[in-house]
Length: 304
Image (cartoon, rainbow, N blue to C red):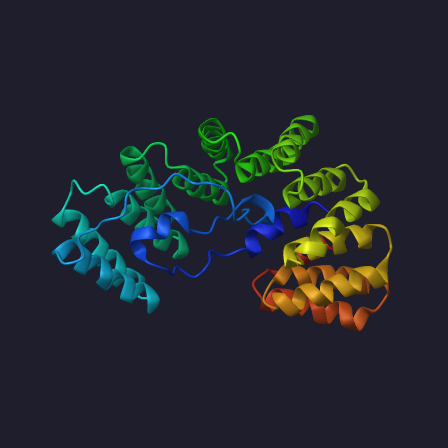
């Protein structure tokens, strides 16, 4: 079902902002469209790390780190802005702006986050991770043409980057340009034949084309190595379409064990109960989906 594609994006959140602020650019998690985590070995463009640990600049950065560890986002941003104003020409300010943007993204302050990512990119225009993060944020607010431009820029800067190609492929799936999507996923396979992103992407192509058995097979290849709840949800949806109800039930149960607050998983389980003509459990899961953030009309529309 098509709703799973958007549901996965809605269910993802940024990782807790942690690690040394000054090196956060290379560690920042991405909200890649439609649920795929970035591959860990993807090379990124980094910014030189400050070496003077005795001055005011570093002291302010260290204070910001303490606030980040305590999830005091506003105070952390205040310290980072003070550090930038203390040394406006410090090349590490790109990293600090990136951290400010990440916290704003975490808080849902998307316009401010985009502005700070853009300011950081003005300082370091070839920073791949910054481009990926801004592109991911653009997908969150449905500015897909801008996201596509950033992802393509990453591909130009880094011919081996697979996550940008995966994201471009998923954007093509959303536009139902399946030939272009397959092209991007095949590029991933050429770059890294062992990449799970290839099977994951092709699974979504097959699913969008209604080839649910083939989609489930592709997703199963990835789940063997990485049983992510978004992957389990997508495979469960395929199993439901193929009337493989026991398999779907197992995937939904496993996904809920990982992310019990995802309302779309309760929608999937409601669909399972609907197919089993279990009205009592169907109504229970509708109420659970509503309790976890969806309005009832949306749930009922998804169940049609």
